[in-house]
Image (cartoon, rainbow, N blue to C red; front, side):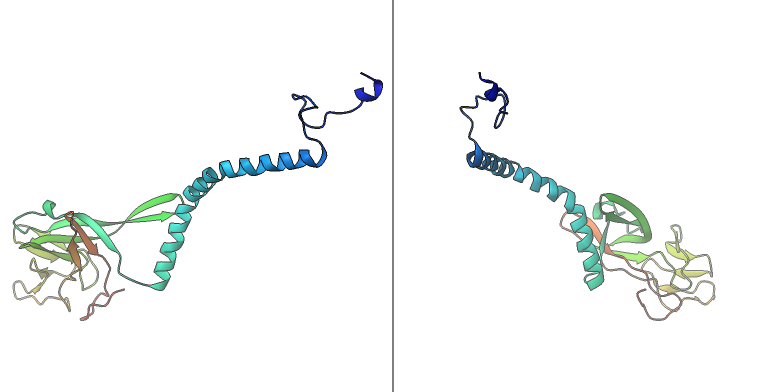
Length: 204
């Protein structure tokens, strides 16, 4: 090997014979082609990963858009029809709201309802007293609802009662909520609150 050849650096990878490697423009085209093929090979994996990462963000944006544009009232699952007592005794159930923000999930109790069987159907009442917003309790022995704040009584259908001649302070009956039984037996309730001390049932 001459002194001149010793000073010439290899064109591409030193692990190959310089006689087998393309030089100049051919070397560039070969390397560019390898990059394209490698990119094409990993593209599906990159897209799949991106889809997984962006899915929570997409759902959050869709939920925000739906809330801003209005739409159907949100339904909450509150157990199954089979769990309700067959004798029609109301069952106290909490309403849990699941909030997904990005990759975090938070479950909050937003309220409570009384659910009971009425024949083959269901009846759902808000636990909030329509007078001043106190919580209405269940008197199982008397088979009535009672609000201890201002001695307001209601029957199991939520109708106002006057016990012992005392006038019921509520201007309306207990608030009934829209509910349905899904095909799998899950009870779905449209939960919301209403204005207190009003004769009209006004959502708030």
